[in-house]
Each structure stands twice: as C-alpha cells, then as structure tokens.
Image (cartoon, rainbow, N blue to C red; front, side, top):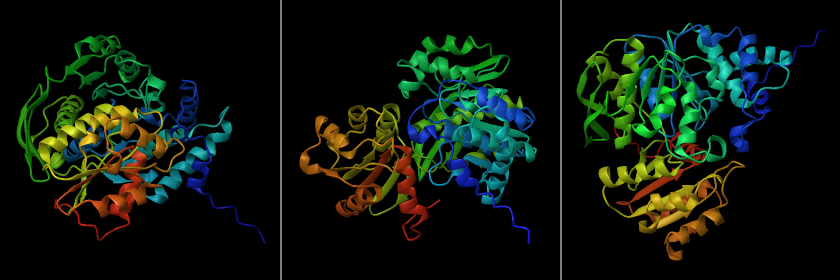
Length: 443
C-alpha cells in the first residue's frame, strides 16, 4: 500500500522560521530575500494597485480605515497589517475579514514550495508578506492596503511600489533599528515614497518634510495644510468629527473610536482614499465606512463596572495620546493601570506619560514574549516616577494582573490595560475572545 504524503502543517512550518519580532532584533537591512521570494511567486505585488502606510503610531488604524473607505466605494480590497493581537490570520484580510485557516494554509504552502530555490531561508515576516501579496493576487483585488512592519526603506513590504504612500506621524521609537532622532526615523519611513507617487503626509513638522520630498513624490498632501480635522467632539462610544480634504469637507461623521488621534487618522485615510481614486469620496461612503470602524486594542472598551479599556500604547508618544484621551473622554474615577512593556522601551518615560503616580493602583506584569521587560524592573521604574509602594503590585503574568486589577477596582472605577501589543493580545483573549460573559460596550 502506498503511503500518504504527510499533511502540510502551515503554522508549524511558519513558526520554524526566524521570527525577528519575537527575538527583538532586526536582520542586516536587505530586501534581497523578499525580492527573490516574490519573484519566485510571480511578482504578485505588481498585479494590483497598492496603498502603502507607515508611521510611528496609527498606521494600523489608518490602514483599516483606508480599506473600509475603498470597500464602501465598491472595490475589492486586500489589507495587510502587523503585528496580530490574537491570531496570525488577522494580518491578511479581504473585504474586512481575516483570512480563513484553509486559505492561509494554502498560500503558505505556495510559499513553502518555492523556498528550496532561495539561497537562504526567509524570515517569518518575509514569508507572511510574500503570502499576503500572493493571496491578494489570487483574489484579483482591485486595491491592496499594506502596512509597513517597521520603518520603511528596508521593510519587507517595500518590494511593492505604492501609488499612494500614507505617513501618519513620526515620533521616537525603535531607535535601535531606525536611529536615535526623529530625522533618522523619518528618513527610514520616507523609503516607501516612490517617484511620482502621491504622498499623504500626516506628520506636519516642516523640519522633517524635505526628507519625504527628496524621494520625488508626484503630489504631496500635508496634514493641517491640505487636509485635517476641522472639529472633533465626544459622542457615545466615540466621537463626531468634521474633516476637510483638498476636494471636500465632510461634516458630522460618527467615528466609533475614542481618542482625538483617531480623528487625525481618519483625516489621513480620507485624504489617502481620495488620492487613490483621484476624486472626492462620496459623503455616504465616508459615513458608512467610518461608522463601521473597529480598531481592536486601540482605546477599546471591553467591559463595564468597572470600565475596562485596552490600548496598545507601546511608546511614549502613544502613552501621551492615551492619557490625553482618558482626560478628555472618560470620567475621573479611581483608575487601576495594568502595564507590561518590551525591554527596549523606556519604562520611566512610559509610566510618566501615563500619569502612573496619580493612579489608585498600578499592576505590572510581563507579556509572554522573550522580549518582555521583567516586571521587577518595571516596578522599579514605577517607584522612580512616584508610585507609592502601597499602590504597586507585581503580577506573574497577564492573566494574574487582570485578575488583581478587577479585584481591587470599584465598580465605578476604571481598569486601563496598556503597553506592549503582546500584552494587549493576551488581555483581549482573556477578556473578550475566551470570556463571552464579559459585558460589552454597546455599538
């Protein structure tokens, strides 16, 4: 009897490759591996028009908004984002839905079939990037929205040429990879701007602008000059925003996301969609697209009594934005802060930006990744910024931290879970995915 060939275990095969996200390091900057890989797959990234997004914060939200705008306009759209919170499937989406297990296994098998022809094995992120480009080509998408993993110039996604490049903002983060200054970081992010492409620049600092203009874009739209937020005001479970673009003013838009930064993200997305379509976006399309927005793990309300919020504020700029949103949109009640960080982050700066000394309780923990900062070190940083020892708890893991936070927070208080996206993914799995009885915000 003939033996059956072994069943291809796609996730095991993927997991056997170097995952630089988990390792907390970056390979020598090169596009050689990913270029060779997509060429073996038929250069799928050149078979459809593409919008490329980067930025220190907000690029995932902008990517999702862009995809929804183009979908609501009637286009078939693929979306590639990273990292995932709970399942790797989240990274590849079509029509707003994450790729199925079967489709993911099929496209990973396509990548595995050509891997032996490569001079060296690709990384985990390179494989997923190539898989996304092949998946979108197989579906014959009319547009792909692709988020940079890190930086821009040397990111694996940059084997594609975006006809629209969207840059959300530039803050100091990932300095070990992108350089120590905003200028060095901006120069890396500018690498996605291809000659003749339209640049939607959400970073308004004029001192950084030349770094993007030097890439030779055909048209440049700058936030607060050519597009932006006219007004934003809190509403139930979100905000009402008025936006302006070079082609239109959009008023009274309901955006079911918290945080003024999400209004800026919406302005970037609408401007990017207009640039891609080379036409105004119908007001009805914008209303439909934004009203249906969800951004898991970004100022997401996942429980009540006490109020429980998740926010992946993984750098100081993000922590400052979170603190501003909490002050503006949520009541001043007893607050428990649950925090876990990666070791390359600035714990003192993060805790200070989050106003940790003013919290009723601070619970520190480590997300499940080799890159996690030890909770003891995070506790030491908390003491440095003025958190009293009696206010501070150290938890062994994320589940224990959440359990302690819920136990010590009164029903009219708040639990704010923030820091690493690895932490947010674990927290979301515990509070939402695996706990259907947790009270959910009305939508």
